[in-house]
Image (cartoon, rainbow, N blue to C red; front, side, top):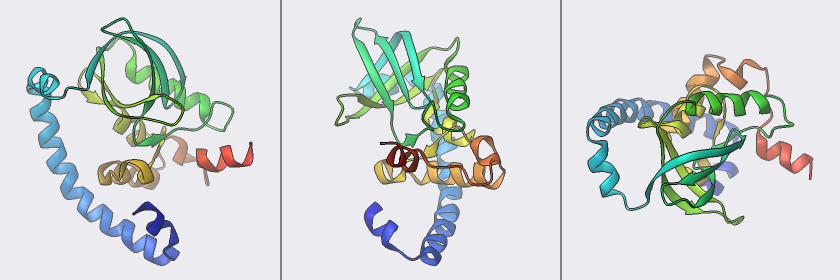
Length: 187
């Protein structure tokens, strides 16, 4: 789907994003209801998901989308946040993005749900701090891009469009450079 999306003319992509916004609005309301339910029933949710892990300690936060932790089993795990792409540390807004993640995780009970393992051997996961989806919060606060080609999350796309429209975080700049473009230029 993502490859087909990128091949569409710009006007078709714009129309697609407008439709996504309309659908996402409905989805956001539904997601809020579901998230409220999950916050009330998080223990049942954790036992339902076999890939759920609690974090004993955060060793380091590399940038806005990569952290190193020690899980409840004492295992060191390098986690790449699922469905987002944050600016690189040396890129404009890179340190602010990392600081945003630090603030979202500070003094909270951290857990994660494994989605996959990437080609670099990192665990790709959704991070939760006091049962709040941090991946989504990073996008919502304008600290990271939605990585639609990997997650296909309409909710994340909607959060990004809203942050962009309201000039929140990295979207306060006129034309922020996407991390994948920055990496391509600096290879």
